[in-house]
Amino acid sequence: MTITTHMSREIAEIPQAVARLLDQGRAGFAAAGAALRDKDPAFLVTIARGSSDHAAHFIKYAVELQVGRPVASLGPSIASVYKTDMRFSGGAAIAISQSGKSPDIVAMADAATRAGAVTIALTNTIDSPMAAACQHALDIAAGPELAVAATKSYVNSVVAGLAMLSEWTGDSELCRAVAALPEHLQRAVELEWDELAMALGGTESLYMLGRGPALAIAGEAALKFKETSEVHAEAYSAAEVLHGPVALVNSSFPVILFAARDAAEPSVVEVADRLADKGGLVFATSDKVTKARPLPYIATGHPLTDALALIAPFYVFVEAFSRSRGFNPDQPAALKKVTETR
Image (tube, rainbow, N blue to C red; front, side, top):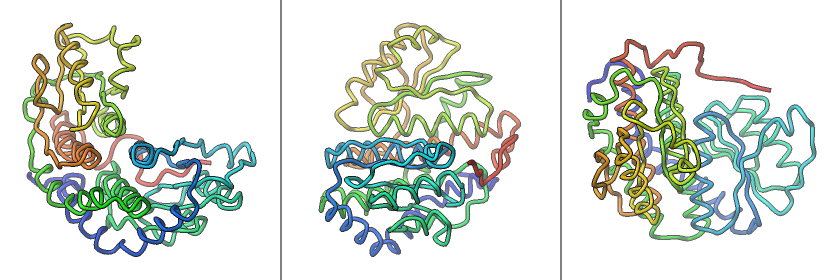
């Protein structure tokens, strides 16, 4: 991987950033996990926007799959704009923000704390207002991130959530899988999706599909297409796309399916091949497809970390794709690194 931009440099740093987080964050993971274990929440909510919300979406699936507790994303405006009091006494809240500064995120986190939730902040800025508003603040230790498009802070937010989850549940298998992530991510950032780059060419719109945790990856990938390459990308469940959106799929409307080695892979593969048979230009991160085109991936041996590792080669691809279309992936038009909303 040639280092030419801040974004490409930060993508290359992902394995080291994850290793640093796992080394430095042990006490915080243990404390947050113990708090969740003691609370035994009936439900959880997440508070985030942008890439952080996609990290929250991933953590939502992880918690629901591992613990069987429902997790919902809260609109921060409920607290910041509408001033509505929510009842949180039986639950927990996870607030995620790289900067920890957006007033609406801070307001919602503070409201959850005051209303009786166990509140946990995942942030790259440990002295931020959001961290102060929560009972437990975990430094995601991604290090400085200069590119506007988040990459290593997204991955580290998810890893922090998975590490905390493994402490909450005492799941030794998940704990081992998380510990092995730096090695797997190093291999993942070395993968090349050259065939995809050549096939997309001047594409202006496409779908990104997945199920379960891989749907959160599809959402993050769609955002990165928009941010860095001004491509209209929409993320859908591989099941939901069949309920209408499939009508747009043809040879000039590509589809990328993110499939992990989990219980959803057979259904995702079935959709990929069905769309390819319809005449679509379809790629999937699975070697089980027969009509769609396979994309290289790293199998991690655990369904959750396997899904997370899918974002690494996509990041490498989209950074290069952005430059190939004449854009600067470090400075997307009309965007800035820290966005504060109310």
